[in-house]
Image 1: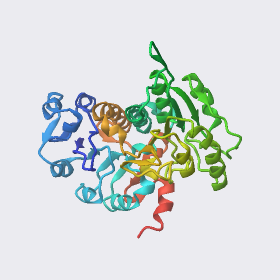
Image 2: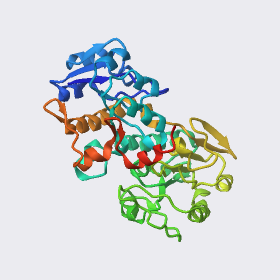
Image 3: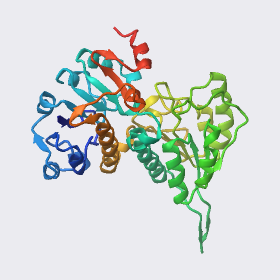
Image 4: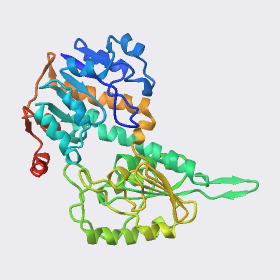
Length: 377
């Protein structure tokens, strides 16, 4: 089996799918690494060669030889055109928002597995790339906020007077939110947190934060996957009004609320931003899906009504070496679960394999994507 690692082509992407020491886990399969693929993550070609990877000069050399391609970001349609027919692809794919890409994968009869569709089951924890990368995002979000807000996070008692701690409000207590809570507490801030799922109250409090309970009940708030489910417009309107009371007294607001495959819910309304103290900070980790604040601009940091709003994308890429190490563990573990004696074993009776499989043999295998594809020409 020949496994290929191309250099990521998406703008601003610094991560690499496989780090050098992970190559040993893929042997005795041949591992081809495009020259420079790991440079932006501080992994040199010599490091890969030291672990018996074969360095090839360009992406075309990877695509023309590889039977399996491992990536971080979804490939472009143009990239897929250069894949060998029948290649296996393992990557983040986000199929609900990349339907034209899925169409091109079908045309090339690519067997494609989406790392963003790995089911949340016990034996797949070491493969959960969404969680590993969200951990990096939550950590980095707090550092961005701490660097932007002109206030110290911890309580300080000095001869010149007492400095009160910063107030941090985290909205959304998934993996990124919980990491943001933990890091904010370690820096000494007073932390409040809210999530539509009451089940996470204990996790929030275990990290030393106060759980914000609002008198609005969400209908069926959590999907079987463990992620939050979309709610009604009326629910979101009432939620915004009640959350605004906590937003306006916070020095830092970190929002992380996402609904897979849909626009991020608006949780911090424009009126709430107007009421925030000047020089307060919002870090919107949902910027890529529209943002939890309507004033967020994807990929930018803006100042509105005296409040700094970070809408930066792909925070894990800002910490590429560590993010790559985590992702490499995820993708390697998943690949080894479907490789048997150096051959692909796609067992559709296995919920792990079936859950992550998007396309195979010219067909869309993921039911929600298949339904979405019906309107794509």
